[in-house]
Image 1 (cartoon, rainbow, N blue to C red):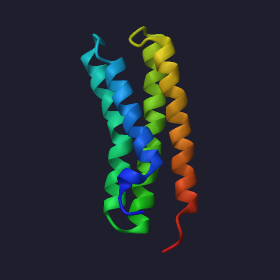
Image 2 (cartoon, helix red, strand yellow; image 1 turned 90 degrees about the vertical axis):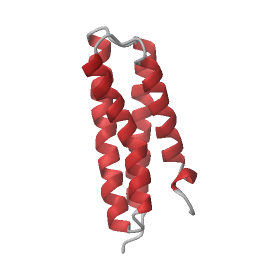
Image 3 (tube, one colour; image 1 turned 60 degrees about the vertical axis):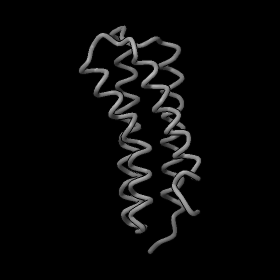
Image 4 (cartoon, rainbow, N blue to C red; image 1 turned 120 degrees about the vertical axis):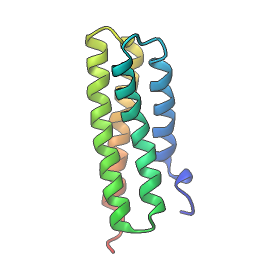
Length: 115
């Protein structure tokens, strides 16, 4: 693999980030909007940063951070639904995609060869 842009997990997490930003456009709570978009942006950003470190151990570390951000994002999406800040159907789609991305990240971590 020559570039992180070729990783399917990076592509999907980038698209999810865009979807979260769009879902939050009309959100009246600036603090919530800031926190959830930061979590969404953290996923593809950490994948890219880890890849660019040119170290297996650093890449794994950043993939784990990205996976943690997926959990943070899902939590915020659930809360956003419950407090009426996010449209349920859109948020549920994002939750499902974040869960799949989390699985993809774990699979990638498991497949990376040892140092």
